[in-house]
Image 1 (cartoon, rainbow, N blue to C red):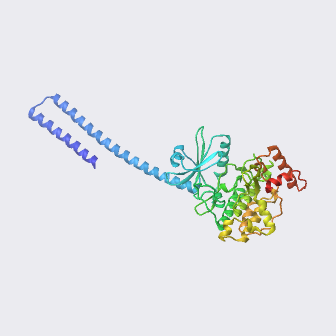
Image 2: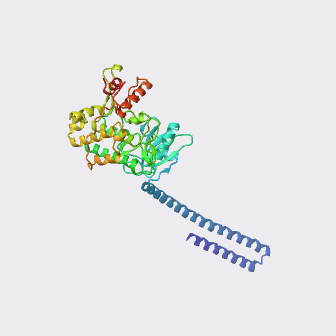
Length: 448
């Protein structure tokens, strides 16, 4: 509309000028030079009006195009965000995005030896957990292991990798869904101190459901992935609880990939005291049965509400501190028919407990922590036992001699501890009876 008005004004002005020139020619008899100057003036006026019209049209089209681009960009971001959430495709984040999302990495959720985890909010409102892995040899291995293990897997009980960020010469970042209820350890172990973390006493019903969730996640990793994935760090700290208290297995920094035709892989001893399988301590390689062993330990901890290995203080004298091995206590109570004495006292006091389920879980746990890896069930079979689809037989008795002595007795020399483990493991796993260092080992285990 504005362009039409401008055109009309321009044409009207030119007509008026022409009329003025003709009248002046007839009445005043002006020279030819005057007409040349007047014609040049008319041309300049027309040129100016033409430029204004072109510029106005250009500006209008530019604004229209910019509006369309903004709209399309917004639609593309929304569509990409939707596709990313549906398809689970990890994306590469810019460091500035993560910095803004985490408010310059102020909201710390947790911290480990080589990594820290921060809470953040993306521009589309998605709550995230950003794991910052420091740039070092161990950190680089952890970053690669975690991406290789979790990037391509999709399971309701496995943490979802949203994306990553690599800073040249700096730390690595992994971006996950934020899980609101924190880790399992805050819900099964009595709290100490005043940590600003969610927690409480998880009911027996929810603990049993968590046991099934974790078993299904590990079964998926071991049996249903293209490459078999070994988690190798199954413990309550690496099991998260969502808003409905469903379990999410997280932290794949120690994980390894195995081909379907491999029976075990060799890797360095690393992990957490009390959860390491005997074959790993003996450097005989690890397999999916190593995760089964760790899972069995977690089951016992959920039942008892205490760590499988804990320090018992007797006065202020450091020499009087002893280690208590909870699985051995449970084993004795199971043989004596007094299982309820080892159940988390908070559950017993609430009365919210099923003794038959306690017995089933204890039996499953002891099948899982058998010293001989071949005696342990697969995680797929564990799921069937937990869901009561197959009978759970009473597990064979075990002396539970082979445990993580390397981490328990800090005062003993490493060579002596390793020699003790090797001797005892050979006896226990081979079925012989000569145990040269038994008194030393049992004093560490039982706390005598």
